[in-house]
Image (cartoon, rainbow, N blue to C red):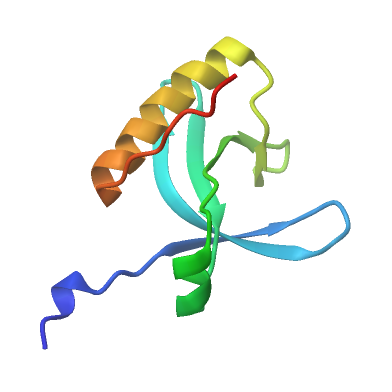
Length: 105
């Protein structure tokens, strides 16, 4: 059996403000000189869920606190979000051979 094509996702555990643990799959990571950004989607391990799921890709910024711990935060600057989102989505589309459409504004 050829094991080279077995997909092993990078899983990120995120705790929400209510203390609930949510698992996300890291799709892609993009680094600039100053910042790190990630494209993630909610992790699903059930085959039926994977087929049925409407994968929403979430773009977040990786921020380090004073203790050196990393956490994810929303990108508040619209221009920064647009630039990073375009780059990350292009990387995701190429890596996974998929196309995402931009919702009409």
